[in-house]
Amino acid sequence: GLCVSSCRRFAKGMISDKRFDIFFSMLILTNTLLFGVEAQYLAYTRQIDAPVGFKVISLVYTIVFLVELLIRIFALGSQFFISPERAWNMFDFSVVGLSLVELVVFVSESMGSATVEDTDQFVYMRMLRIARTARLLRVVRVVSFFRSLRLLLLSVLNTMKSLFWTVMLLLMILYMFGVMFTQAATQHLAVGSYEIENLEKYYGTLFQSVYTLFKSITNGLDWELAATPLSA
Image 1: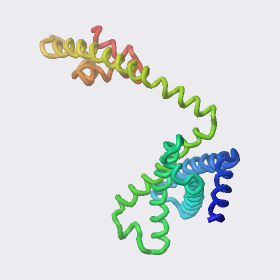
Image 2 (image 1 turned 120 degrees about the horizontal axis):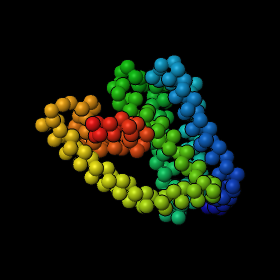
Image 3 (image 1 turned 135 degrees about the horizontal axis):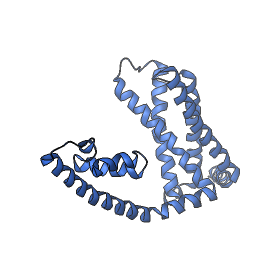
Image 4 (image 1 turned 135 degrees about the vertical axis):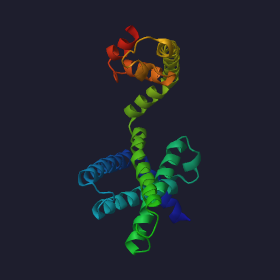
């Protein structure tokens, strides 16, 4: 009725306000920072499960993001799924949906209906890891709120095609030289009268040869170490 229409107009005005986007962008960034603090704390204390404090804060973030999603769905209606921004909207929808998994697990634990001891711990930890990773990915959403970041992302994406063919050319070069070096190394290892140090280690198989060449051009291995067995 009239009340619903008024509320929807108010919601549309809210989500179209730049301050709305900035506010939730800041929440996304602070939530991402919280993940870093939690990861550092768990690494420092050698714990598997986060303390209750972290879980409560995560719960608050989940509820706030859920409220934001519901506001957007209410304001846009069916346009939420078919508008030009539908890709970002579906991304938000999926991330918040996965975040609810963590919320359900936390509430179940609080009510005593489920614990890590009486459930499969591996499945339990995997569910939480997926949920938290999904929430961490939400930082990508910040890109859509800031024009400069969006343009930078689009520029990177536009170069992906050229990058793909560059990588393919590099792999072809590595493969060709890998075959030649492997053949030479195999011939020497089979009939050679003396042993060459590290020849089999670096060029004993085709995979090892290509991997050695790759490490040489990416500073994973000093090129002199890779070249010495070939020059012996």
